Amino acid sequence: MPSVLVLNAGSSSLKYQLLQVGTRDVLAVGLVEAIGLPSAKITHTGGDKVAKTIDCPDHKAAIAAAIKMFDRVGPRLADAELVAVGHRVVHGGEKFSDAVLVTDELLDTLDDLTPLAPLHNPANLVGLRAALELFPDLPQVGVFDTAFHQTMPDYAYTYAVPHAWREQHGVRRYGFHGTSHLYVSQEAARMLGKDPSEVSVIVLHLGNGASVTAVKGGVSIDTSMGLTPLEGLVMGTRSGDIDPAIPMHMVRAAGLTMEEVDHALYKESGLKGLTGHSDSRDVEDLRASGDDRARLAQEVSSYRLKKYIGAYAAAMGSLDAIAFTGGIGENSVVVRRMATEGLGILGIEVDPELNAARSKQAHDIATADSRVRVFVIPTDEEGEIARQTYAVAKEAGRV
Image 1 (spheres, rainbow, N blue to C red):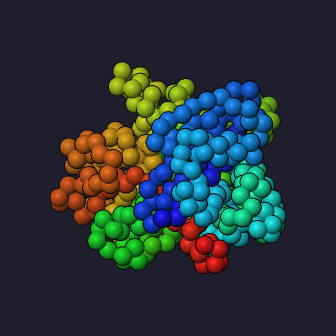
Image 2 (tube, rainbow, N blue to C red; image 1 turned 60 degrees about the horizontal axis):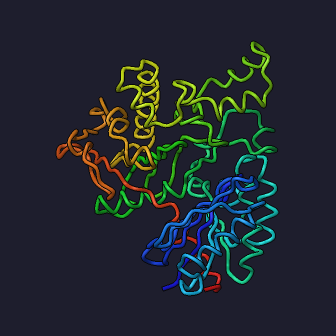
């Protein structure tokens, strides 16, 4: 059975998975950390788990190290019938509503889109170019975080800012986590026993980065992240929604530079800004011990979640299910409880015992009488990237 290698290049890291086409079985998973530093390390699990420090000056060296791990630890890429390479690309702007083959024209377009995602697209581009060198004979496909949200109506993605900002600088809502929102919404429809075109689902992707999407009839009609992944929910280190005048106020009142404000909103805000801790698990533990800052942080973040659930239920005009996913959404009993308390007005009733039950499988935690089902669905972004990669390569006659 053929396989697809999925690559996710960060600024100083490379995540990878080898997945079988059709079954989505994970044959191997790996992570290269601290690329460009003396402390660079690769961890590869392909049956056995092996971790070792490596000389890794750049992403090309990181991918080469991964290839060596496949040869030494397994499975060998030739034996796994590797047929294509899929890449997670964070920002596709308005250009891409579907996954596409990687070409020189695509790389040029992503270069042009860098101002929209200066923290993410440059790393994605480095990974793309390195993979093209190391796998010159394989079709390579870019799968965009923003693609799923290109179905949003213009009134949902348009900001009320000057015309020139929108037309000349691409200022609009794009949304992110699209691959996860697509997969989870389709799984929610399957659990409802219906086609995605027949249902309205709110997907809550909750991790260190977090977003909510309203999915009606199988397509995204609104999502909480905007021009950047900073807007929306309270996240690990990101502020989410704030008064847009706050940055200018801090420049004037505290003498901060725009770079310092940018760093503070992306890296020092969210749970970290409220408690000093960015990990939701640490915040839960602190609240359980009586820490009042942790209490406030959880109430602020859960209140933001409730507001988005209510707003998106109103925007869709109907609601069949909400689905929690991501590291926090799949594992935090407390976050799920706090986000859904008092939402009986929307027909949402969570069973405390079902919510507290641990499971790695998708499951329903709503009461029998709840008009809206409440699902916990493990996301599978890499599996969805592999599926789309194979489909694009096959349609192009490359596999």
